Image 1: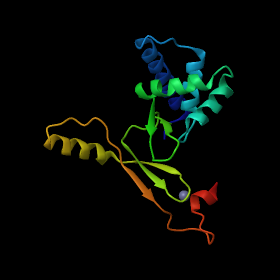
Image 2 (image 1 turned 180 degrees about the horizontal axis):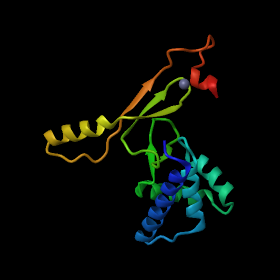
Image 3 (image 1 turned 120 degrees about the vertical axis):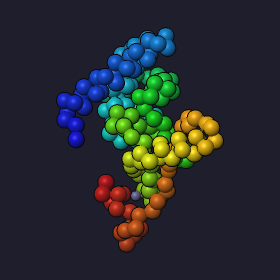
Amino acid sequence: MATTAETQTHVEDSRDTFKQFLVSKGLRVTNQRMAIFDAAYGMEDHFTAEDLLEYSRKLDDSVSRATVYRSLPILTESGMIREIDVGHDNKYYRSTRQAQTFQAQVICEDCGKIFEVDAPFMEWYGKTVCDKLNMQPHSQRLQVSAVCRSKSPDGVCMHAAAK
Ligand SMILES: [Zn+2]
């Protein structure tokens, strides 16, 4: 496990990368945009646009909903966050700060919880099948919908019960 100091350095590097990305796109580095970045990197788990708005406002109460919604595609394009579409009404996002290897998602159909699991072989698999077609992989994802094997008598799964 990385120490807190190492994690902090990593976040600082990502902050700098994001600033450089904004500048490269001709966008201003504003306090609001950086508050949104800090909020995205402060959340351990998956978040929705509304979660991001709520957390960003705790850091800087001048952050508007419109700014959050405009910043999400910028954060995604910069590679700072990933968009995760699990087929729900809401889109989910997650910072890329912990993800060095390809991540697959296992989604609990009972409680909706999204588990991220390392799946390094997926990158190899995507590359191998594309090579056979003389193509270059652009993006890929693996999502597994699952149900819990152990549930309480009233049908509540273990993750939901643990909340
Ligand atoms: Zn569950």
